[in-house]
Image 1: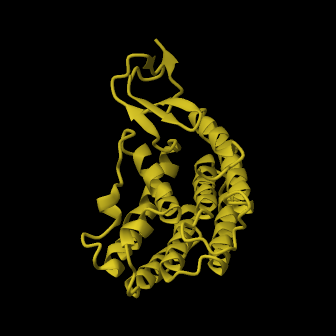
Image 2: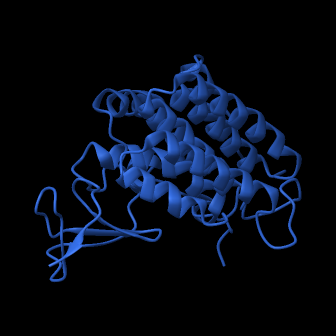
Image 3: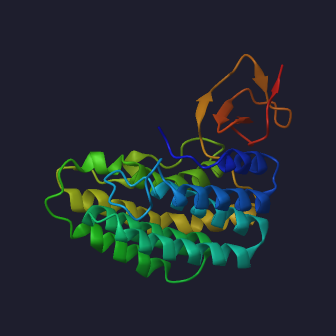
Length: 254
């Protein structure tokens, strides 16, 4: 069972498809607050949680920050980024494992990059150092595929695909080192990659004025749907929307 965002993520995705980016930011914000209030049934956000489900709330707040930037609502983007930084730091109350706390530092850097609040390079270097100092982490790939870490990878993937004709532009091999037996460098690669790429990806997205929806289930050359905008038959099923994989427009049945 995943986290419950109260249906706000679906509304955020629909708003992205309609190019209503400030509305998308509002809905992503509400999704984040909803998840953070109760990440799983009966679970509080400040309780120990090996899977880190509260990270889904941070994921939504990061997406909200970028959406506000694209909408030109820079003040709201800054406020959301500052909020996200505070929440990410506070979640260390419950997410006690050193590997999780390093991931929360990665989130702090992501919020700085998404909101253009300054100190981005230093924040990513702090995350990289926290990962590099890890010792004795067992089954690092399980950590890297936990909800917390997947949530921390979501924003850069979403932003990058919108600049790559809807394709997967950031993959596992981009975010992680080559040797999972060496957990520090394996995870530190996440912060290093983002330091080099995420700020410029966000800046390009803001300049182009288009934020794509996340990539969900996709199909090339679909027999049923065709994009009314660009004519593509490549489809992205995400949240409750059926979107063109290429231009993010709601598709229509042929």
